[in-house]
Length: 243
Image 1 (tube, one colour):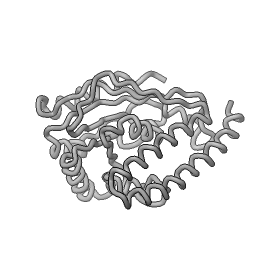
Image 2 (cartoon, one colour; image 1 turned 120 degrees about the vertical axis):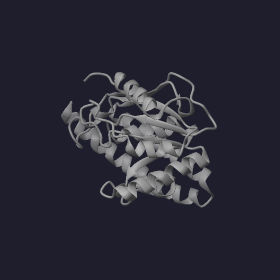
Image 3 (cartoon, helix red, strand yellow; image 1 turned 60 degrees about the vertical axis):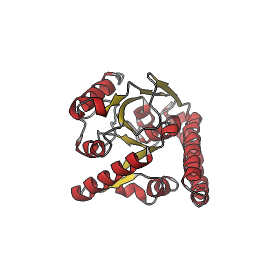
Image 4 (cartoon, helix red, strand yellow; image 1 turned 90 degrees about the horizontal axis):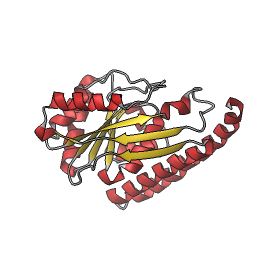
């Protein structure tokens, strides 16, 4: 299987980077017509990135266990297993205008991805500069609240290489919550995306079913922040499937 994957991983890499290059130009044009057009281009970029994984036999499924409120800010909190966590969240949650917190280094050098992070409303934080990070997250929280967009947070900070969840870091998340007192927290669990990289960066894993589930929204107005975060963390980790 690993030998076969080498060929298909090469084909996938060519297709994947072509998608990034093509949509970099599309995003640049779309942004000139305003936010909504740029957002549509980003939504479809991520649909194509998801479908490109079919070249490796990898599929995505999404299950929403409870309705997610509309017209208010949502804070999606999720475990993090690979870079392929992001396209399905953007596509399946597109009605909620998801915006990500990302390390500042990703804001340069990656076609399409860096462009969207810089122009699409993401928070780019410097992990070596706590002052910059907190200030950026504060402004990000206010922007999310003002526009009734959604924030997507991976509290583990880094990807889990084997699917096992890491300890959640909550300080940055609390800064966003502080500026979104009427928001809902929606716990999200991702399973199996780490298996795409079970051999490392090359070749990629094949025939994995990547599953995303969202759970009962927690209204921050009605729940203590620490309690809400504890409930969300427990819900996420309880639904991570064993290796």
